[in-house]
Length: 191
Image 1 (tube, one colour):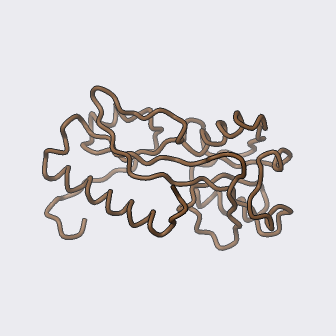
Image 2 (spheres, rainbow, N blue to C red; image 1 turned 90 degrees about the horizontal axis):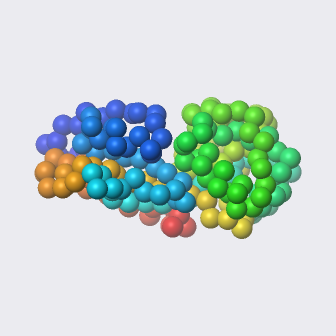
């Protein structure tokens, strides 16, 4: 953190949002994300502050038959091979909830929890995928919104009750909030 006397010991735990209660046993602040249709992890022993919403978009190789469309309905992708993340993670939850809302069952052929690998697979024509808008960096991909459904993930900061009263934790929470505001300013249509 710039301009702060707070020492940060950060860890990346590749766990679903349902693991927040266990993570708070070891960490003061847990940044998590969930399908916007999923319930928050807030509870009597967990305070949650919502940081931002990030749209989930469809990514396609540029030579895909639908790549020229501005937006695409899930029913247009019924015969596609899908690349997704492991079950229990927001992108797969979004895919499942979109499927439930539209009645279209996607055929998932690969599950990879690394967006860079997913991008390479999609760019290589091995399938299509849903990806968080801010995570797409591969120049060989076309990103499109899904039509007819709202698809996104919510970023939340979880702490123990009243943890914000501690100056170091308040500084970390504020730094996350500033970064989230910067990200959403870059992509104003994300709300």
